[in-house]
Each structure stands twice: as C-alpha cells, then as structure tokens.
Image 1: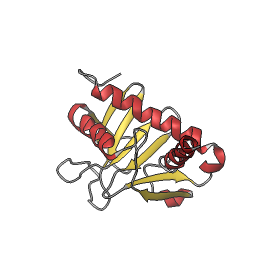
Image 2: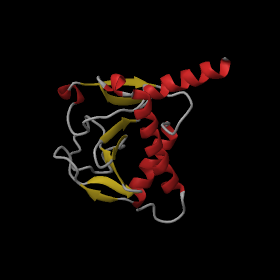
Image 3: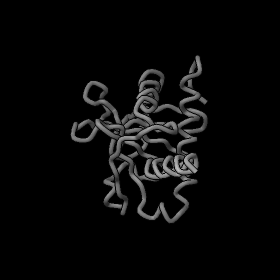
Image 4: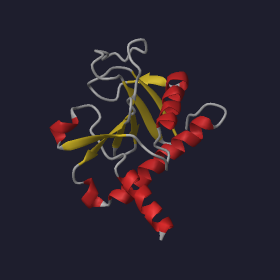
Length: 163
C-alpha cells in the first residue's frame, strides 16, 4: 500500500510539472496558466539537469531566431529536438546577449509543440494549458520528462551533442 501511495504522490508531482506552452508571448494572453514550485525528486525535471542542458547549449550550440520576440537565441539540435534558451524577462535582451542574461528559460521544440520551463530561484515555473488535466495529463508529463531524458543522455555523451 505504501509503495502505491508513493507512486501516486510522484505522479501528482510530475503531473504538475511541465506542459504545453506558447513560448514567445505572454502565456496569459492564450489562456495558459503558470505555476511556480520546487520539485522534490523523481524524473529528469530538476534544476541541476536543466542547468546542465543550458550549459551544453551555451557551450556547443549555435544561434537561431525561432520567434519574433528575440533574435539569435542560443540553440542546439539534439536527437531530433530543437532546444532554445530565452533571455530572462526584464533584462531588455531581445538580441540574446550572453553578458546580459542568465538564460533560465528552456524551450524544447518538437515537430508539433513547444515546451517551456523557467528554472528560476527558488523553484521552477511551468507553463501549461488549463485544459491539459482533462486531456491525459499524466501521459503528457511522462512524455515530456522522457524528452528531457533524451536530451540529457545526448549532452552527457562525449563528443558533439548534435543529431
């Protein structure tokens, strides 16, 4: 019984973590909510994992504009995924100058979706659609966690992390 309760608690934590977002606009403009939390265990969605991905993008990535809000975002293609870093809000850094920003917003782009996580102090802000819970939230979060796991595996492998 205890093991089932622990698994259910982990699933609730994962379910609250990361969901579809509109990365280049105010989330509220599109009926999207955000929540700030400190993540406690389980999965790949940790501050240290996200920082590791950010450092790999800044070290080995290139520059590419993916939306009209920023220019020349740090980007890295990994295992069929496009990873982008957005500058921190309030820093007036539309040109994505590394000397002006900590780049604590990671965008993971697949063929169909953009996923956004802000790993800010003290927690992690996740943007998600209000309807996501009714649309199979648990499966969705497991899929996103698996995407982050794929990226981590590639950036931890010696050699270039590209495709």
